Length: 125
Image (cartoon, rainbow, N blue to C red):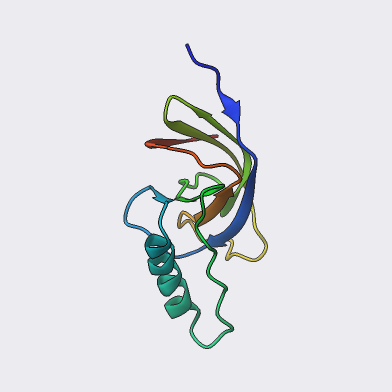
């Protein structure tokens, strides 16, 4: 049985609209990142455009869509990795910046501060 290693991460942003059709997306090329940010730029309309992060060999970007149960948002508590599987521990909370009645799963962009060959992502509450 292999050990789970904890991964340092940055919780970059929570979006209230879909950035991918899947439950998660590993952004491992600049082309994928550009496509994700083209959706963000279209949805944000006339506001200042968010800078597009650069994909490199030292970090991994992922998008997760944790389902909501009793709150309108989640915070990412911990990220661990074992056997090509990324485990993301989240905690629900009521975000004052999001409509209280909103039950749409947030699309969360995480920057993992390590290159991870994740094949599967499991969100844990």
